[in-house]
Image (cartoon, rainbow, N blue to C red; front, side, top):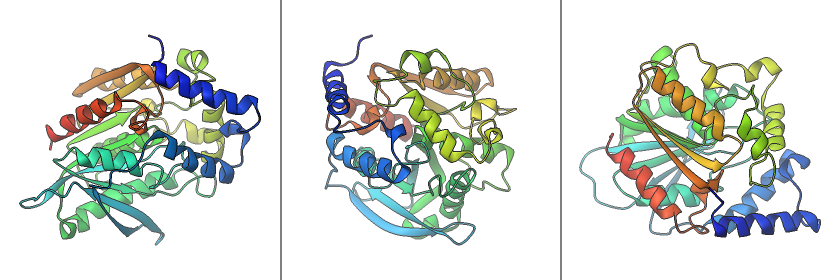
Length: 318
C-alpha cells in the first residue's frame, strides 16, 4: 500500500530540508543535537490536550538516581484504585523524553478507563545497556510498592511503549514470568507499537525502507552503537527479545506495526514468535504509515481512531 498522501507530503518536506542543508539525518548528528532536533520536531506532529491532568514527580532507581515521571488522568471521577497503562517512550535509547511523548500520553489518557504513568529512563551513550532496562523495571516495582498512595492499582497494569519503549515493555513482560524476584509487577497485558525485537539482524524491511521513511536503517545502527557496551549486548534478549529462549506464558500482547518501517519485519517476527509460544496475540498494521505514527495525532486524522483502538484493547484487559 502507498503512503498516506499527508504523510508523503510531510516526508517530502523533510527531504527538502536535507537537500537545502537546513537539516541533517539523525545519524549524522551528535546525541546532544539529535535530542534537540527530536524535541523540536515533536511540535510539528501534535499538540498536547490541556483537558488531561499531568502530575509530575520522581521515582528512585536502584542506584539512587532520580527518575522523572508523569502521571496522566482524564479527570473523570473514580471509585477505588485506577488501572494503569505504564508507558515507555521510544527514541532508540538515545533521544526521546517525557516532553517528546507528552501529546501522545495525553491523547491515550484522554480515552478514559485508566491512568497513564510514564517514566524518563536514562539514555545512552551516557547510560548504556542495561541501565534503561533496570530503570524500567524499577519504575514497575515502584508501582507495586507505592502506586496505591496515588490511587493506582498495581494488580491491573498494562505495559506499553513505542519503538524501544515497546522493547522495554515486552522485556518486563518476559521478566515478570522468568525473573519474578527481579520484576515484581505482574502485568495484565502488553502493548507493543513498532517494537525493536532483534538488533542483531537486518531483514527485508530494513533494506526496503532504509532511507526516506522517517526512521532510517543507518539511524538504527547509530542508536545501537551508542546503546551497546559491546556487540554481545545486542544479542542479549533484554535488547533483542526475539532471541529469548522461552516466550511462553506471557501477558496477552497487542503488536501494532507500520507498513513503511524498517522495523516492520522484526516486529512481525516477534508477533509470530509470541503466537507460536502459545500467547494471546492481537496483531494490527497500518500499511500506509511509517514509524512513529502514534505521535502524529496532529498530522494525520486517522491517528485518533488508532488511539481509540489501542485504548479500547487496554480497557478490555484491565
